[in-house]
Length: 288
Image (cartoon, rainbow, N blue to C red; front, side, top):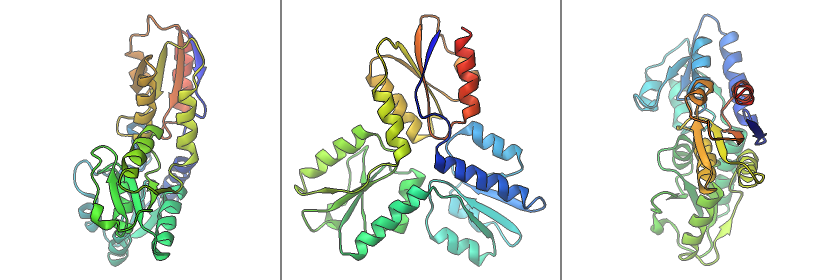
């Protein structure tokens, strides 16, 4: 088996920062309850490691996060996820005397700050995102003046935009295809639509590398969770290349794949998959 390394791989800088904050929070508070408000990053293997370190997951798949947050009280600490969160969560935590540890990705913060600045300057904003995704829902809650555009359904509130030249911003993990198709669709309504910064550099670099695989590759494995938007986008790009493509969480999942007909394989990771998982899978593939 010949393996091509799709770079960059492993955790992105924003995920590394969030994980460092989480582990340090628990280490420095050995006798306190430290909660993760939602999946800190979208990777079940990584979340399991955090839980094994003593962090308590408040899972958005079981109950809405605001309700779970309201149940915490004095003596508890809560870590806000890398995806961002509604600002009302800060108010709830302070009212209940819950310590806040904010692990929001710097680019997500920058995106919101830029939108708020533009709103103050009387600009109109269209935010491209995936309905229900934590990052998009946080943005919608914090920048209510912006018009939300769902890249899957193409639904948006046209009444929020009065002029012909709004500025488009987006969820950081969208694919180039999603952004381009959304901008094309919106341009039919707003001929002088303007583009702000639409993706983080880590997302752009990984998607660009996936589109520029060398000749001869017959199989692509993306290591990541099916709950991770950036991992799913890499997988979708691989599928469009007409190569055999797989999305696998970890080494066990890769071992379950039938790779008997694969000769030259490209190995990539989403931004919330660890370097350790990547190297373990790479070593296994090279042994085949």
